[in-house]
Image 1 (cartoon, rainbow, N blue to C red):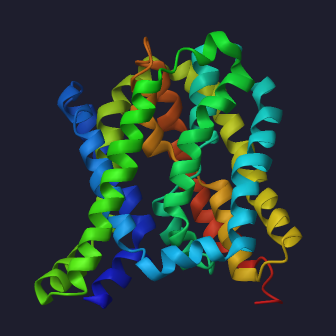
Image 2 (image 1 turned 90 degrees about the horizontal axis):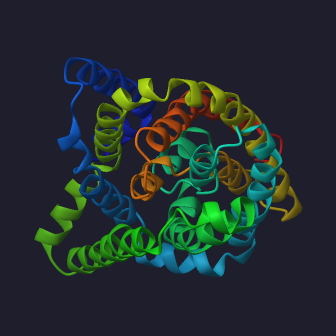
Length: 320
């Protein structure tokens, strides 16, 4: 089954764009897709479960012992990138909800398809994969703090702690515990090993499913918030151009090998739009503005990834 998995990973960009196109057609044909919104969280939980399942227990342990890589990853995503976002914030319209949406999506590092994109871009995807639980936990802890610093108490108060606690339990703890339990079962049983192998084929399809649900359910709302989406798109483009260089510079400061440095660059540039969407939907008066702002970033980022898998792959090639 490895050849099927390789084929899915190598063709993931085309799969994701085809999924977005299909979702757009569905959104046009069936503009009232409220039922799909309720499927976002279960689909996300399953996506994260099969993503965490790819992290062998031994690799997860090594993620904590590889302090230079983990340090570079955390410094990039939770010091350098927030400073970059703070520098871009004056170019965002002075509307608390618009700014909240931009900050939610740009301050949260991706923990799912960044792994396979980084693999295509000649990065050390296994190091990045092993660090995904750490990235997800830290961003859930840091997001409220950053929002309070950058938005002030009033605007930050729009985000209630309940959705963050729910996200921590259902999007981190439960999928991670289930993934560990399945790995332990796979090590002791042929049935468990078969189940693990089959589920190992699903990270790309599961991500495509989440993309489909998000785009099909949120695209009709994008039209209602078109002006806001157009206003924030240049900020997302600027971020997409600047963030990989920021990650690469931090990796150089930490003297990482080129493949590990590319992984940091990918992580700094790729955001967690799919996972923060439920947090945004829990904000009072969020619809249609916040979903439109977050989906816009997703669309910009998918185009940027086409450039990253070629441009980032060349970084440090003389040292690889």
